[in-house]
Image (cartoon, rainbow, N blue to C red; front, side):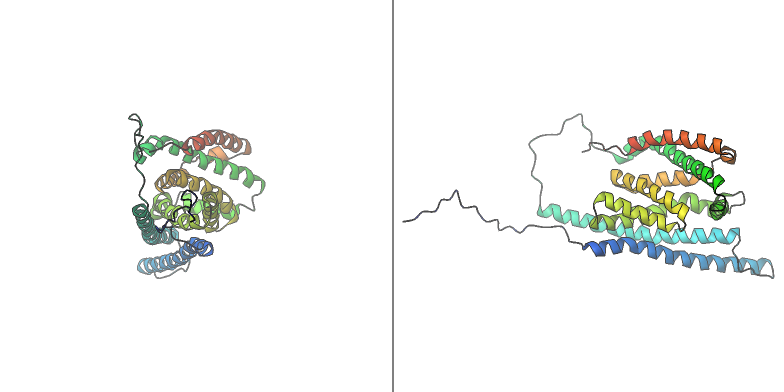
Length: 309
């Protein structure tokens, strides 16, 4: 008579295991890039809408109609573009958040956590993101203005040596921040653009890219898309680097809101940099060096990981 050693036989686990939904990496990366293509399409719609509104205003005011956009027409283009971005990408990102939440709830129901016998210490408070980032608002203000000074000073140094390369870039910046800027352009650049672009890149693009790539890879991927979105080499370089910083802020905070605040501060700061500070290479070099000294500790503090409950 043969007996089986029960200690050597392992019981079969018949309980079906739940796995998170599988996303094909190629499809996820494609979906991460689709919002950029869609943003270009929406920008074209805004451009033609701005031309139409500008021509209508010219017909009402004068008998001649110019096919070129004036300051008011460009303001309408920016305003329409970022309003479209807010609606489309805001709803898109909200849908992704709801979908992720439903998947998380389903996973928790099938895999309930075991109750721990260790009680959390009474002196360790639960993490409050509003209070946490509220205390760090001064750091965001300093970092945002410092980043604007650093980029402006560095570009001023390079542009003095290579004036022809930066002529088109200077015209663009002058159109956005000059003395004759339309109020619609100011509101769009300072407030609407940061919200819309963070929802687009650190919201939709980052969420899709994170499904196909490691977190750091997703940060770099959305940052490159952010640089391409700006449409010229100079802005591509510093927008990509800025996108990396905003991506790490998105990773650290788990939200797009801190990035929106920092992005707003950066864009508003472009109106607050005195031209006299950047007239010569020595002045621009001092501004660049001082701003860099300020930027580094702010980044270290803001991106420092906190132990949270």
